[in-house]
Amino acid sequence: MKEPFVETRELSYRYESADAAEPRVLRDLSVTIGKGEFVAVLGHNGSGKSTFAKLLNMILTPTGGKVFVMGKDITDENMTDEEVLALRKRMGMVFQNPDNQLVATIVEDDVAFGPENLGVPSKEIRRRVDEALSELGMSDYATHEPHRLSGGQKQRVAIAGILAMLPDCIIFDESTAMLDPVGRKEVMDAVVRLNREKGITVIMITHYMEEAALADRIIVLNDGRVLLDGSPEAVFEEEALLRSCGLAVPQCTELVHRLREAGIPLDGACVFPEQCAELIMKSLNKER
Image (tube, rainbow, N blue to C red; front, top):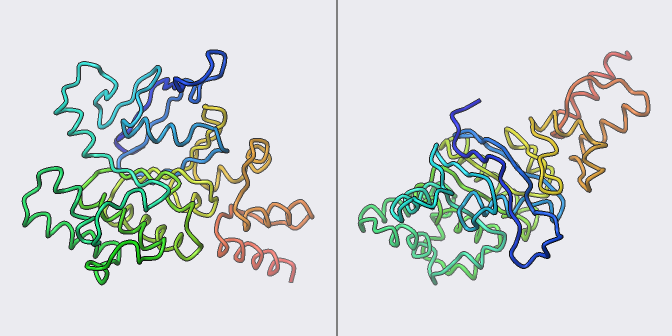
């Protein structure tokens, strides 16, 4: 296990508007996410995954339990405003609709918005903006108007704005849900690169199995509790359990499961199409 970056202990949450008889959205959730990990969080609608993300980013305050960021208890009522701000700088969040996160009329001004509000000096802001746009492949659009960009480009600008604040962790809350397949690929390529090359801890809330397959680890939530926690290969082997709580597996994984049920021996895990093709070719070669 890598050095812990985020840890929850018996974390619970119930929305104030909920009836007292209604179950908690999160119930005694205890998970640890390591520094530099790429973790995907899956779950059906209402499973608590978005609430979990907002609790980690201090947008919501838990009903019960503790949240630790880099070993510090962010639920401690005795924390000073300065300590809270320092921890908030460590965690960035990208939401579902990029239009809700873009605030300026020019791309580079939007990316500069966060650092400016943190009081970063002008020369350093310029450097961060240029570097963030370059990392996201958006340098050529620095002087463009955000509303004229595609959905995938807008979301990459939103990510650049978070990246310019130099966070240690970025939480993506269904950040590709409103994008077409091209836009989703653009964003996911950027997410994977930031994690692999920059070492940024990534927590991705998603309902796309193919996106979750790119993660180091998958946490599946069901009715506010952890149902599964493991590698994509291990989690997607539990097809029946996933389907019982309204989730699917990647298409290539499902194909391998169906072929096995039909009596075709396929040895090994499969979460990507290339792996699927390799397993089938090995099986065909054995029969020759």
